[in-house]
Image 1 (cartoon, rainbow, N blue to C red):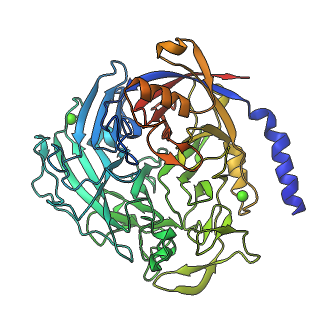
Image 2 (image 1 turned 120 degrees about the horizontal axis):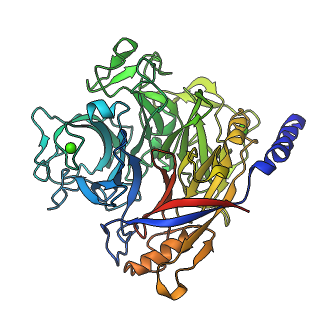
Image 3 (image 1 turned 90 degrees about the vertical axis):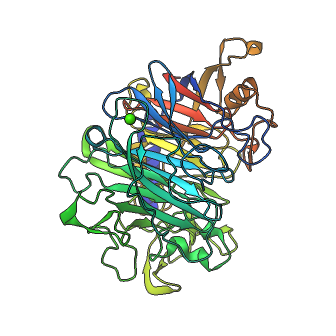
Amino acid sequence: MRRIAFILAGFTVLHAADNPRITLQLTDFVSMPVTGTIDGKGQTDGMLARINALREEPGGSGRFFINDLNGPLYILDKATKKLTVYLNFNGRNGHAGIFHKLSYDTGYAGGLVSVQFDPDYTRNGRFYTVHIEDPSLAGSNAPDNASVPGLRLDGYTTTTAIAPPGETQREGVLIEWTDSNRTNASFEGSAREILRVALNTRIHPLGALSFDPSARRGDPDWRVLYIGCGDGGSGESRLAMRANPQRLDTLVGKILRIVPDLSEQVSASTVSDNGRYRIPNDNPFAGVRGARKEIWALGLRNPHRLTWAIDPANARSKRLIANSIGLHTWETVNIIHKGANYGYSLREGTELLRPDNTTAPLPAVDRIPVQIGDAPTAETVTPTYPVIEYGHVPGGGDAVGSGFLYHGRRVPALRGKYVFTDISTGRVVYADYNEMLAADDGDPKTLAAIHEIKLLWADPDGQSGAAKQLFDSMFPIAKAAYRLRGGKTGVLPGRALVSGEGRADAHVAVDGGGELFIFTKTDGMLRMVAEGFVD
Ligand SMILES: [Ca+2]
Ligand SMILES: [Ca+2]
């Protein structure tokens, strides 16, 4: 204990001067087309545009791919701000898009959840998407190309969903797309369903997709895809499915690691049961009888954002980071290790999680059982704990958003800092990356500190004039813009414990150069971080 106290004190002294008070100046970049309803009364229908991620297209085209949960995948030209619907995933109930069973209207993370480029995209035109389907809806679960004449569907077949124990309500679908002409803003080419995972409820879906950006051809991680698979809501259930995030024989509540291209990493992997992807031989449970070979790490509730932190001075020093949304108590940022067990739903954050979903201090002997079937085995492991956590309390938040290790040029003071948001309150914060690495020490008591970022923004509404004002979070910014765009629902659509009535629904994103953007679903705005100031 003495040693821990010394180390913590060391952090404070060592890094205090390196954690400055930072203000970011925001510039409105694009008003995303309204795909919600201006007076929506539900959890999510009143959000003006449910932008979930922004990715810069590799190859220097100067274009972003942006997905809206409600269905559109846009291409945005950064210079001209021209926005084109590239693919529309919403083919539900007479909508013109591709998937008749798209489930986007209930839950915060339904619909078109994610898009990610193949590391070899500039050669092969490939990218990957995850969308959520409701199998109880009428119609086929195969794509409909009426809205995309260039999409060839000859030979396309769906796969059988891999189901977790318990009843299921949704399916997360991973699809590989190959565009044969990257120079235009339309899709022409083929698609292939790779993986379909059934989910117990409509929350915490299959979602995050991430390739190691430092891997090169010939490396063991070249074109190897890491996937965040939420627990589908199983972990907070009072039914037997509560064990699903801990069960090695099911995919939910895990980080998965697969090779989507059957012709890649051939000698170091085996073909999956569904024949659509490969599984690396060095996955930690590849040789464990009864375990799913796809699993890279386990015991996570909703690891909805995965990102790689690469040390700019040493690309071999890299970490996979998962931001995982907590139940009633703790929001966490986790450094993901091969084979590690993050404890959920036996732990939440750095506490014990009881069967009634309340938390308590960790037990003196901090071990949890390995579970491969319906019952725990005799074998036990020590859980791995987050490097950052904050509570569902005033000054904390409700749900951790996306995060990135900043490596851009516009805000030098943020270099070496991990920037992230709380979704509902719209707080934008950072932690020192070296503190995060030091906190990844097997000791739940050591954590990296969180530092507030202030925001400077000029409210475009005439009443407060065009002068820039200082804000503590994205919430008042989204609120002002929501009104200006015609939003009519309360303070802001949605609600949460700490944010109260209304949610900002804020996330950060980075472009190809590592520069920051912030998007907010409730006002449907994408904003650029133009510069940063240090007090
Ligand atoms: Ca094209
Ligand atoms: Ca620690």
